[in-house]
Image 1 (cartoon, rainbow, N blue to C red):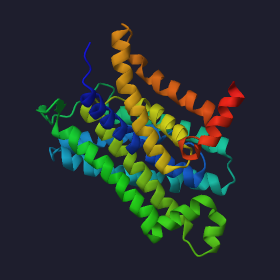
Image 2 (cartoon, rainbow, N blue to C red):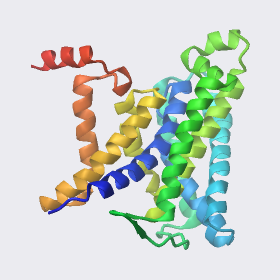
Image 3 (tube, rainbow, N blue to C red):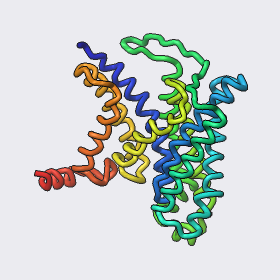
Length: 304
């Protein structure tokens, strides 16, 4: 069986871009609030449903639907903080309390979306025919999403390193009390993080649904690998998460080829990403962000 390496790399870039969009949002909220927001999965699903409403029900087109999903899902994230997690934090809720609350909130959102949009699979009507570029089979939709993910990565790099807001975000993440004492409006920063993190989740949902379909559990399929990207990259590290997302995208796409060759179901492709995650954590428990040659050698000796 001959392998089209260029196509595998392209597909990996596309898959990794999806994981990066969803995982950056997860990393942002964790970096500030220090708890895993399981309801992030429903933000992903909500973005897809809202984009479908704008694009296909209101007939405003797919680009308008994607843009609207970004904004409205971001607003949903801010509202979630203001009316749920913010009050819980003020009352002294622990990480466990917040995590359980996010699970319950996610269930409420999922069933609310089922009441609004139903349980049947939905499909975007926008059609983007494929065409060949050398050995690659691509579509304008795939290219636009890869470009979008690269643009998001570049914008976040500039935001974090070259702007006052980015420095305020990093300060708030490292030490909220000290940041507030230094004159940083931490409440505004937290709401900004919620908006950006949730908006990117919604955009990731649009990206996933446009290439497959919209289902009530769409977000969960993305969240699993998003969590893997966050842990593999180093919890709280945006750059590590980005690199891990693309690595897992490559592993998943190459793994599909291996599974087909072995006559196994391609549904096992998600396990391959977790296998890489487990192996990485054995040798570098702090994730990609904390990897050094010395730490790898030390871990190898400990295992041996």
